[in-house]
Image (cartoon, rainbow, N blue to C red; front, side):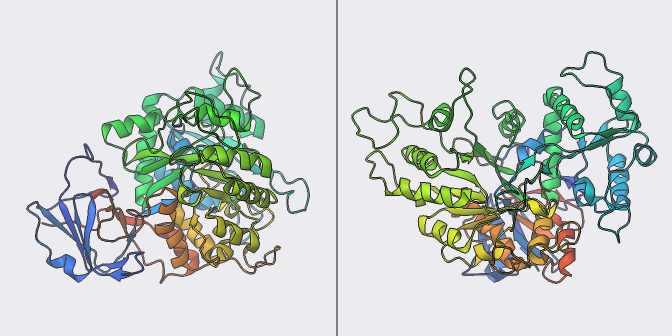
Amino acid sequence: MRLKLPLAVFLVLAAHSAAADDIRIINANIITMDVGNPSATTLLIRDNRVVSVGNDAADDDSSDGTLSVIDAQGAMVIPGIIDQHLHWNRTAITWGYALHRGEGAYSLDELEQALRARAAEVPEGEWITLIGRHNHEQFLEDPEDPDSGRYPSREELDRWVPNHKVLFSQRFTPTPVGSGRDDYNRANFTGPGQMNSSAIEFFNGMTDAAPFLPPIPEDGALSDELSEQVFQWTRANNSLENQIRSTRDLMRWSHSIGLVGVGDAGGMGFRQTQDFTPLIELARRGELTVRNRYQLRPFPAPAAPEQTGIDMLRNILSAAPLAESQNCVGPEELPGEGFHMSRVGGPFFRNMGIGESIGAPTPESIAEATVFVLRRPDWSFHQHAEGRQIANIIEGIRRAVAVDDPCRIGTFAERHSSMEHLNDATVEDLANMAELGIGAGIQAVRFLFPDWQYSGPPYRAAVDTPGLNFGFGADGMFAGHGNPWTTLQFMVTGEAHNGRDILTDDPLDRGPQQITLMEGLRGYTSNAAWFMREEHERGQLKEGFLADLAILNQDPFEVDARQIGDTKAVLTIVDGAIVYSDGSLTPTE
């Protein structure tokens, strides 16, 4: 049997429960992330698991099923990438056809090429959008001038893409209030935007737009306020059918770069139950092929907007009710409260805990919330932590762990809870986190917005902290980009989108924060799986582990460090099935 795959085909199984052919990969340069067997040339997949890695994989013919052989022709194979903190769900339901390649354009010429290529794929008259995941200053008019970045004009967009509607909307703008360590932890979740003529005509031709929209200016340039209003209109008017199509499209793009799983933090404006619908529907159909581990965010009850802290946690925890006879120490337990539903779901869509906040970043609030969470079997949390919040949160967790609460179930360390972002974490902070068993989730928003935060990200400090569970992400796809290879290039070079090195000179005296590519990949594979409590079966190419992997178009260890971001997948396997191929490798029986 010969499987013919056209360029950039996206293959989706009719149902994940259907048995896939066995797959043998040969002549490969396999990076396993298994410390006991770090490299290999062959591996064998049976059903949805890796059954052998190494030379013996080529000789295992014990299966009665069909065997497909993929000759990797010396290409590098890695475990499928897991971003431990990516707002993937929010981008999955974006308006129109997303300009995925736009986030990796760093000049107007590159943006023009991306738009023209996308226009060739999208039906005429439809929307092409880049909502979030960019900084308008990255599109340089003069590639030699890092200060020449701007959006294309309406006239330029009309010339480049005459048969489609085009919308750009930046969704994040840093707003520092001073020059101190805590003065940079400020931002607005909106930014400028730009439209072409067809998009302007669409909006200005509407009557009684709901929600209300003022007229779009003739030049198509959107102020921060107008960009936010347009964005809210698109959210309110995006059909479920279009959201499902957009989610499929984001899956295809994710697989094209080897991204197979995300820890999804929801995000500002994400409406949880309503906005989960497209993913739940695709999971129900067996068509969701990015492993999504979502976080639930505490919110006030609709009738009690003043709720904070424990009261908000009670709204969403759905925890196992505790017996009234138990003498709990700390927050009061309410009889009959909720039911336990942690990790409810299937292999592609289930919960990973609470995010991004269990309480105000004070020792008292965090301690109370942590005691409360530790009574709920199997729940973890992933707490936003920046600047001087970091030490306060660590102290709160330390106090909670010290409480002798008879209602506690298990230990704190076994929950795999984490603190997220951590740009300004000191070496002492990271050591304290390791001692308590707090994971360190570190992201790369500063790549697009180098003036966001005082320092960091502290990649080197985290990697060098003994016993610290660290994992990496982009924190896209509103504030940051989504492509993990962009993050990996940033980790190695220290250079933001404009070429400015922001990791070598560290204002907190932690030393240069660049790390090696192998260290970065570990944080995006085996270490990232720890945050989902799945390190026993994901993130490594190892016997018994889930068969999620990517065959790459280049060896990122051999190219110039500034070309790491050009890495893509030529073939991606998830759950033992081929979900993406660019056609360059043809499986044979």
